Image 1 (tube, one colour):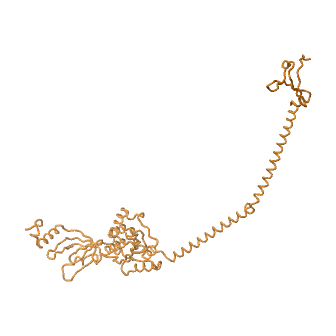
Image 2 (image 1 turned 45 degrees about the vertical axis):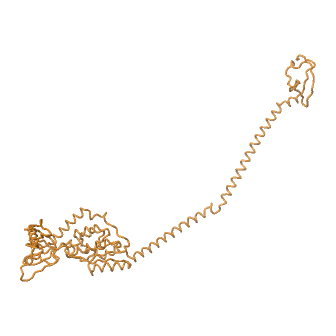
Image 3 (image 1 turned 90 degrees about the horizontal axis):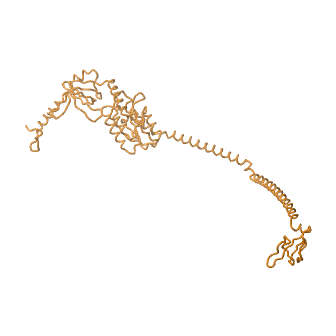
Length: 413
C-alpha cells in the first residue's frame, strides 16, 4: 500500500487511507482529562448518545463531546450551558464524516470551592510575577479626551457609566465596545475589545465594567489570559467589576480598582461643577492673598514714609552742616593757636639771633677789618702778621665802611 512518505502528485493517497491513518494516530493518544465550559447540550429522547460542545474559556476554541445521556441525567450537579466541567474520555476520529470528538465516560462539575482554590493559586502566581506591584500602576489623565468602555450591551453598568460621566462632564467622549461579560465567549470578546481600544491613540483610559454576580458569573475576570492582557496594555485601565465585596483578579492587575461602575465614572471623569467651584475658590483665595500682600506692603511703605529720615530728608543734612561748621571752627581755632605759638617761637629765635648777630656786635663798638688783596675778595684780618706796613685795609663799623693803610704794628697791651 502507498505510504505517506511515497505519496506524490502522481500517486496520491486516497481519502480513506488518510482518514484511517488519522483515526489510528488519534486512537493512540489514549484517554485524557479535559477542562472546559459547556456551551451547548443536546439530549434527544430515545437516543443513546448526547452531544455537548466544550469551549476553552480563554480562547476561541471548542471541542465536540459525546456521551451517554445517563451520564448527564445522573450528574450530582445539574449540567447546564455555561457550567465549568472536567471530562474524562477518549478522542475518536469518525472516518465517515472526517470529524473529531471526545467520547466522555466521566463528567465532573467544577464546584465553587474548586474554582475559588484555582483563583487563589492563580492569584499567588501573578503576584509572584509582579503583576500586582503598585509601582507598575499608571496614573489616570486628569481630563481624558476619549474614554474606552468595555461592558455588556444595554447593561445597567453601561447606563451608569455613561449617565454619570456625561452629568459630571458633558463634553466627555466614549468609545464603547459591547461584549459578553459572562459565559464561554466572554474572555475572547473582552480580549478583542481591549486590544482594539489599547491600539487606538485617541483613547486615554479604558473602563472594564460589569454589574455584580455570582462567583461563576465573574470567572472571566479572573482569567489568566485577561489578567496578562491588562498588565501588557499601555493605556491605563480601570476595573469596575461587580460590587464592593467582589474582587476578581482583574481588580488587582488593573491600574485602578473601582467599587462599582458608577464609582469608575467618578474616578475617570472630573466633575465640571466641582472643578468650577474649585477654580472659583482658588481665584478667591488668590485675590485675598494678593489683597493681603498689597495691604502689608502699603503698611510697610507708610511706616517708611513716617520715619524721620523720609519725613524731613533735609534735617539730616542740616545736622551734618552744623557739625561740619563746628568742626571747621574748632580746626580754625586750633590752627590759629598753633600758628600763634609758632610765631612767638620764631620771634624769640629772631631776637636771640639778632642779639648774637654781627650787626649787634658792630653796634656795640666792634668792627670787622679786612685786608684788601689785589685780584681777589677782601680777607678778614686775623693776625697782625697779616698786615704789613702799607697794607690797604677795609674797616666795617656799625654805620658804614672806611678804608685805611697800616702804618706799622705794636704788641698787645
